[in-house]
Each structure stands twice: as structure tokens, then as C-alpha cells.
Image (cartoon, rainbow over the protein chains, first blue to last red):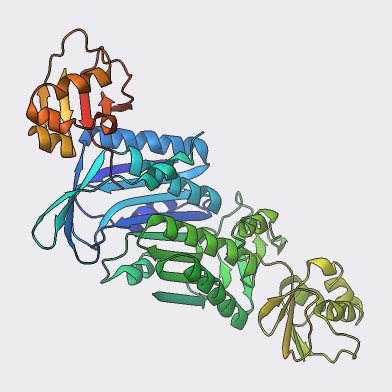
Length: 152
Length: 152
Length: 83
Length: 83
């Protein structure tokens, strides 16, 4: 069981991360990769700036990953979350799950994303294309509801 | 909206396929990639041989993809399914979905996999590691049930 | 019409396709499965559990009560195991 | 104890961290939010909707009724929007 968690300013290579989970193994039947990208919101957004709580971010994601591992039979989990400024089209977050069967890989990836959204200490601020000051992105009730469906 | 469907003997590059869906776009917030791999079943399997119904396979996958596009707001869908002999650890099937939001991308990818499992005309035959003749893989009731949850 | 066979059905019959000419009373896909099962020992073996046999008419999945009139290519195969 | 602030809370208060010494009656995380809100105009603005403020004690999410005794680092921030 491989768990990789990284908080970094730079970009990531989703394929390389997925390969690290499967290389040399023959017991993995399913690999689910989720990449979250920065949207330009119809051209109105110049960039997102991601603030985070450094030590807690890594620890909280580790706790979420441990819950996923306890709940599904996973061969590997990778979570990478960027901080700092990201441009539209750029990657923000990566989740990779590997398992013998697809249901576990899919569910664990969705669980990880739902929990990252509502528990990982990251905040997005908008920089607007027209130069006006953007505000902090509002948390979405839909994300809270998505996380609640996994309640034990 | 990009739809790519390929049935091929050779391997595929999941990352390159995902990149094709997102390159030059700034309206995509979520990319889900599912790769299905050949397991060695605890060392007992030497290879899987995938038989398929050539013309129908492509047409049926196109019909399944069209249903996914009608049901979720997708920016792109890619499905690649291999035929012929694949070794343990090798990739068999790829589904990539891109959307503005993660829920659509996740659900569409799961829907596509559930429907591919039960409707795409492919059959797996086992080649055993001990040289004995392997049988045809049995269809799983769990796959039928997984597909049924998407019934309109 | 052309009959095509896949996987265990193909293996048991020993061929992947052939032209078949069912008699007039064979109206549905299920009738055709039953008629094929009577063509000989290999066919009987291929269709020994007719309920699980899937049928596609001109490359579309159909149920056993589908009419075969006008079909050019009818395929017979066990439940699929791709993906 | 050290108080740390993030996102809109940090911006409104105008600093990212400071050492605070709440009086003895401040027992829970919620008490601390109320006490901080009384420290001045910027604090009142930062905590103008205390119900939405999230609190973490020593880098673990806690509810407002959590006890703060023994805490070394208490963080205050709006609902998270990562992922």
C-alpha cells in the first residue's frame, strides 16, 4: 500500500503519478485519476490564488487518505494539491486511486475529492481578468452535501 | 464536445488522451481517467485474450457515449478498448471524461465503465500460468447490478 | 441471413460465421436460437443454456422476442466480459 | 497561545498570526471567537459572522464547543474552498 501526499507550488504529472502506483504490480485492476483544473469562468478570471495552512494541509489530507484506506481495499493512493497562483487551464489538484476492482477505485477517488473540498485547509481567491479585485471563492453547499453522503 | 472511440490491439497512453481533451481549453474543471488493467489473479494467469465483435464494438460504445453525453454536461469523452492478448499489468480499457464540474466527470466515467462491462461486445479468455487451458471469464452479476443503477 | 458467433458459442459450434436459412416458422431471435440448437451436436452444446445467449441484429442488442424479419446479420454470444 | 488566521479572516485582521492571552472565562473555541471579535474594528469585521468561522486546534478541525485548554496553536478561517 503506497500513500503519497504532496502540497506543492509547482505543477504535477498525473500520468507519472499513476504509473508510480502500478509499476511492477500485477494485482491492480483499476486506476482512477482525477485532475482538478482552473476554469476561466467564461473569460472573467485571470488566475486563482490558493492560500493554505501548510502543516495542517498535509496532516488533514493524510487523515482523509487514512479513512479512504480503511474503507476501501486500495493498492495505492496519491493526493497532490498545489498552492499559490494558478492560471486558467492549469492543474490544481490530483487524486489517484488504485485497486483490484473499479468500484473501490472510483468510490475512494470521489470520497477523497469530496473530503478535500470540505476539510483540506485551502482557500481560493480570484484575480479578475478586468483587473478589478476578485473576492474569495465562496464555499458551495453542494460540496458539503457531497461529503455528507460518505458519513459512516 | 470531443468524442473519441477506438478499438485497437496496441497499448494506449492515458495521459496523452486526457491532454487531447483539455489542451487549449479553459472551461474544464475536472478530468476523470479510468484505466482498467489485467490482473494476474495471484500468479495463476499468464494472459487474457480479448475477443470482440469488431463493427458492433465501436458502434455500441458510440451509443453508450452518446447516452453519457445526453445525461451529463461533458466537454469531452474518450473510450479506448484493446483486443487480442494482454499480459498481467497491461492496460485493457481507458475512459476519460472532462467536464466543468467533478460530479459530472465522475458519474459519466462510472456510467461508461458500467455500460462497457455489460454492453460492449468483448469476451475475455484466460490463459493460465501453468499451461492448462483457461476458460472464458464468467460475467459478474455485480456488473449487471452496477449498470442497472443508471436505468432512466 | 448471416449468422455470426463469438466466444464460447463460436468455439462450440466450431465456426465464426455462416449463412443460415431458417424455415418460415422461425420469427423471433429466440426462435432462431432454438432452431440453431437443433442443427446438430455442436449447436446443441453451444446453445445448451439458451436463456443466457445474447443476440444482436445488425449489430444492435435485441431481446429474444425481437423479430428477425429483414435482418442481414444476426450475432449470438454469451454475456459480455469486456471493460 | 498562538492564533493563526487564513484567507478572509487574515485579510480583515491584517495579520497572519499573533500571540493572544484570553482571560480565564474563555474556555471554548467559540468563546475565543467571541473574545477575538471584541479586540477591535478589524477583528469585529473578521468575525462578523461567527457561525461560519472554522476553528482548528493544533491543526485538527474542532467544533466551537471544543475546549481550548492546552492548545498551542489555534487557527481561524472561513469554510475551505480547495480541491
